Structures are given as structure tokens and as C-alpha cells.
Length: 189
Image 1 (cartoon, rainbow, N blue to C red):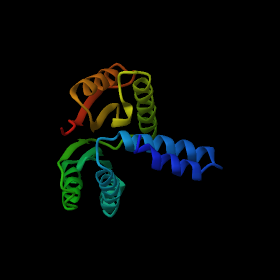
Image 2: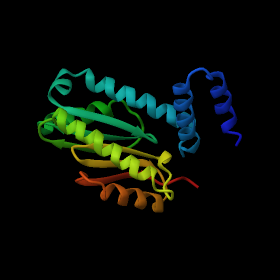
Image 3: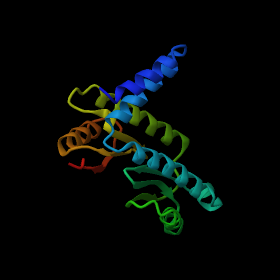
Image 4: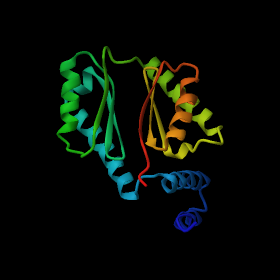
């Protein structure tokens, strides 16, 4: 309850804008429920920006690949497509050079970058998975990040085994999902 007081105070200051109140409430609830410390959440957000900037700094990676990275609890999930192993390795080496501290999960596939249609379909799959998770009262969706890349659903977060299995089953049985890849951490005691 004490963690909610600062959020409620901020919401009261934003009383004129319903959209800001809604975003603040949802974002605040997610931050409160997140197993990561506030500083780790900020570090992960900063790492996301560093990853995007580092990849964009290389014209060949920017123009010939479709690669992104997502930081979660100090670790990085690298996803997307590169036309050859040389560019895939360059992307991984670029992120390793940032020395973010955690493990890098390399899920970059060798192949042509996906089309706009495929990326739009991936967004739709992510929406469907999140909606199905939200409708399951036994699952705490605020602790799980869902990312879809070329029909593969990646699940990230800090959850116990039961929550991880429930999230995996929901994703696995969602239309359009080709494969589910778990990148979960377990909560520290």
C-alpha cells in the first residue's frame, strides 16, 4: 500500500488528463508489481536505448538487417534477422562492446529481414497473447514481457515456475504462434 501512495499523489496532480491518468496508473502498477528494483528497471530502459543507438550507428546493420535488442533484469535478448552470419556476429559484438553486464541471448535468425506485413502480423500476435494472458486470473501479466518476431513469441520476466508454465501454455495455444521461447528469470528469495 505504501508503494501506491506516491503513484496516487502523481495521479491527483494529473487530474485534467484522463489519458495521462490511465497511463500513469497502468505504468505505476507495472512498476510496483515488477520484481526488478526501480534502479534495475531504469538500467534496463537505458540499455534498450543504448542497444538501439549502437545498432543504428552501423549503416550495414541499419540497412541490411532487422535486429533489435530488449534488456530485462540486466540480460539482453537479441532478435530479428540478418542475411548472413557476419552481420549477425557484428550485431552481437556491437552489443557485447556496450558491457551491459548481463547475459546476451542470441536469437537472431539468418535470413532476409521480415516484411512490413510479417511485422504487422507479429504485433497482432503479441496483442492476442497479451489479451489472453490478461483474461487469465491466475496469471500476473504485469511481470511478463511478450515480444513476437516472425511468429516466434519470446516471453521475458521474473516469474516463478508456475507462472512461467501458465504464460507459455497461453502463448503456445494462441493462433499464429509458431514457437514459444522462454527467457524467464526466477525471483530472488
